[in-house]
Image (tube, rainbow over all chains, first blue to last red; front, side):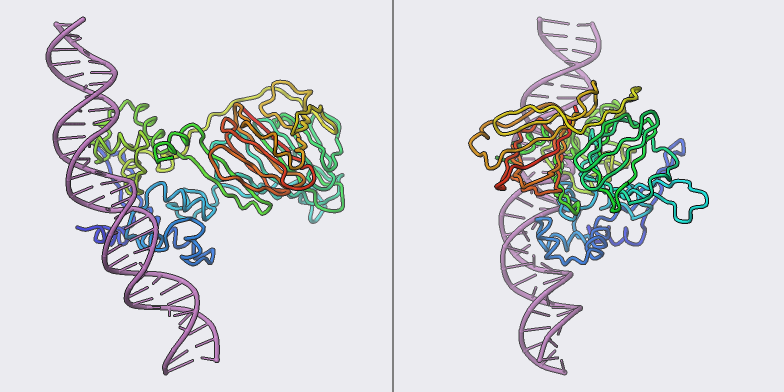
Amino acid sequence: MDTQDKLDKLDKYPSMAVADNENNTRMIEKASVGLQLKAIRTQNKLTLEEASKRTGLARSTLSKIENEQISPTFSVMQKLASGLDIELPQLFTKPKESKVTGRRDVTLNNEGTPHATLTYEHELLATQLRNKKMMPYKSRVHARNFEHFGEWVRHEGEEFLLVLEGEVQLLTEFYEPATLVEGDSAYYDATMGHLVISTSKKDALILWVTAE
Amino acid sequence: MDTQDKLDKLDKYPSMAVADNENNTRMIEKASVGLQLKAIRTQNKLTLEEASKRTGLARSTLSKIENEQISPTFSVMQKLASGLDIELPQLFTKPKESKVTGRRDVTLNNEGTPHATLTYEHELLATQLRNKKMMPYKSRVHARNFEHFGEWVRHEGEEFLLVLEGEVQLLTEFYEPATLVEGDSAYYDATMGHLVISTSKKDALILWVTAE
DNA sequence: AAGAAAAGTTTCCTATAGGAAACTTTTTCC
DNA sequence: GGAAAAAGTTTCCTATAGGAAACTTTTCTT
């Protein structure tokens, strides 16, 4: 059975379960880099030529990978992920529920207030690097009325923040509220309840860095 | 620099990410299948011979992968994952270790502690807090001060930087120089030689956060 | 609908991954 | 400490991945 035959089979029979003596079963998924790559490329409206430029790989190579004519090496997969600005596992994982969150929302309870939701829009930075000691991200803090606050945000580790734009109020569980303007920063233990709200009319832009 | 040399370097200097305002991240990552494979195999107390039997791959192939002499194809990585009964991403993702903090401190900075060198003026932030996991500071990078970038800067840990004002060039020991404008950021292993110079006529203002 | 241009595929060749076996290093056991 | 066994590495060869360019198919354009 040649390679193409094998691939044809895989196409028809996506996955398979294998069990050992103790009946420990494991699934062998058909993890198709080709199909994933093609999906990602077409969703981003890229031609093979453009994808080639971004990844530094030959047009022909991309075509052959997409058509499952070859199995890419790991180094090629890294170039694909890097060049197309995706996480490496996306190349062989069916798009399911969003695993890495691009945004983290905090909802506050405000009884009687119709649209009383304070939303942070988080934009993760350096996401392609895994196992970082620090997690940097920018947040747009929507402008809102500063009296309405609810649940504290808490999480493991320490947090540093710097105000890039606007003016915010940093509310914490154990300290007085602090007003921070552009250029101001704060550092605190994130297990302490904390909350940032925009006190200016515009949204505020914040840089956060957390470390556990 | 031949392939082995590159791999040797990569071994020591894992990876780096550079992001612009739209969070388009260019990154060069070292996700070592070799080191991961060796770690998994030895932790499971398997010899190359046993791993070979389980995965159906040659002993020599496994050895070469572990020693980063070759980049395995995706189909080989699937055999590794399946045969060693692990998830595929484990082959290039380091297990994360977590630490716990008991401290509950917050410190605010409207003005920090200046500390000047020839090219940089450093302003340490959150100095009141000791034993932090992260060390944040702002630097004024003097404009076009090209004479003083003789030696690389190196230190333990990882470093994140964000350009607050101006335009700089991030020079690193093993990667192409990266031009960063206001809002751009970078994340890298600080044991790799690195250096920032201002390419605009004005001084540049940088936020740094380091963690060991 | 015909020609041109763009996108995608295949061919052909070179570079490199993977396997068998020889070789080297490390461990075990007396 | 030395021989034997086991574990790991390197060599050498074959199979296959990856790149350049020719070729085919699809999409515009008029």
